[in-house]
Image (cartoon, rainbow, N blue to C red; front, side, top):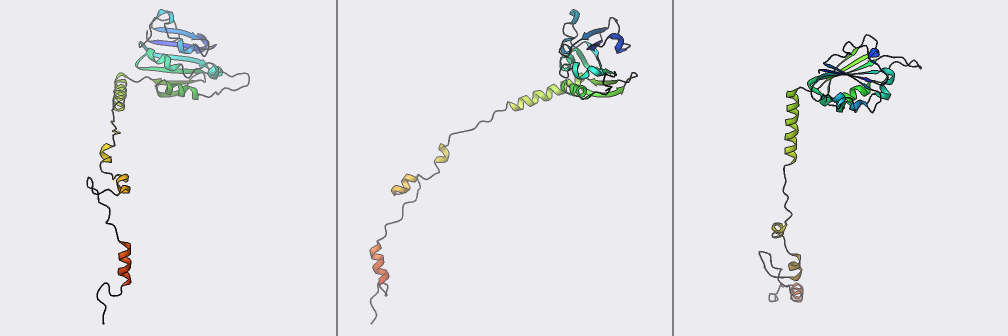
Length: 217
């Protein structure tokens, strides 16, 4: 099996107008009638294991049902069915609704490619006036490089940084405030307090004009 074609909403095989939409042995055609059913269309469908075996996946949806039936998150569930380097394309079939609006917002398609890890390749205008958006899954080499980069990043994040909360060494170099207040003498290299000053003797000395010498005659 090489291709899976998914018809979303009310779109039928004839409406899709796809040359690949047939019952050949290498093609799987499935229907996703609701938005919620899109993500599970390739999970054990008809007891066929599609995981990692498909070369391409095509999603066909009417332009008038793009907003209501296309699930941007569903592609992430479909990508594992693709081989590395496989393609996924979204075919928007042009259809004018009752209000005459025929140009819906295509933003959800490109967003879904990004969310699914796909690389956008092209946007083409189909013969029926619709659009075809194509994206590709990373090849094996790119996937290996990505996995290695992720592994290296995880290893770096596991690097342990040991922080020491023991401040004893720092305390050894600090002066004990209690010793300073208590007027203790030299201890462990600390300076002794200044000697006591006889305030009364100093006052008498300052009052003597001769500075303590014998008075001049």
